[in-house]
Image (cartoon, rainbow, N blue to C red; front, top):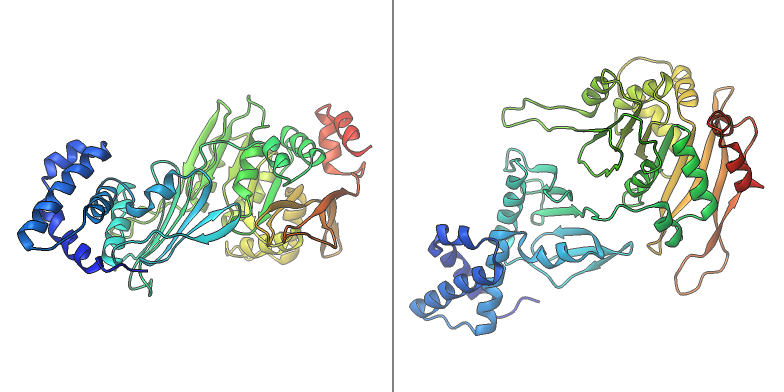
Length: 424
């Protein structure tokens, strides 16, 4: 609820900003206490001159808000510092939501008005070397700490400026973490470790916020250190620990609509860079064709993610994305490409209780007529009864066929005995 001092605070803020000594502010930018004290003295001086009464608590609140606005992300500062928060979603000045443990919660934070919100959004975008205005009201970028930033302003955003921040995790999650959280069991973790080591081509499928990038990071930790890896992303989120990694990132068009570098441009160039493995943060369009070609032509162990609700849907989505390359390939040829290139599909899901699970690990077994054949190796089955709104279930396996590509690859790498330990 807006308090009775809102109008006073709004008008004082407009007077305070022009009165600040910019040289002094610049020197204090990294000392929030001193910066707040300096701004507070200016507020008190203006209050006396304009005969506006502002209690000391409100003076401190306004000084702190302006300090955060100048040096950081305004009222989002505390949310950015909270390691339990994974997403910050701003829907106009009065509606700020956060995701904690897979659940969205509205906070009591708010901006003074939409003008302040827009100015902070522009400042955030400016700090990453991008521009946002009425002619270019949409920006998707990576912040200096690695967090993903998306900003939408008027005239596209109708109810006030929108800011979406996917916070960058400072800790690289492992399969041990995923098992501890109940996202998978030990058998699945061991199987995926073998798949990553034995150069299995992997597609991770899932919805927004289902944990695809977390899983991709965990998989990448088991790639051999003597392989040359090239990563391609729209906003760099992958944290590979191997010594020989080349990181590439797409680029939006500049002020004069030039200089754009698309994911497909990166993919085509990557094939000339002698990669052992290619990891694409997410396939969204025509670059999927180049990704499949790479998997089919000696770049075994390549990985990517895409948006889909099930392994079968992931196959259909790959077909559609290859068609977006405008190569006039018949559907039969596209399906042959997919069935020979991709070995396993991992389905990551965020369930309605907020928990994240690996609901399927499925292997592509080739084609039967016009249909790509899928076999589930692991899947998550939900118990009929749940308690307290929490979903309970178990991970089950139907075993691994001896004619499986995974089994054959493991045999080549001398790891088939490890598979026997999992499935026997």
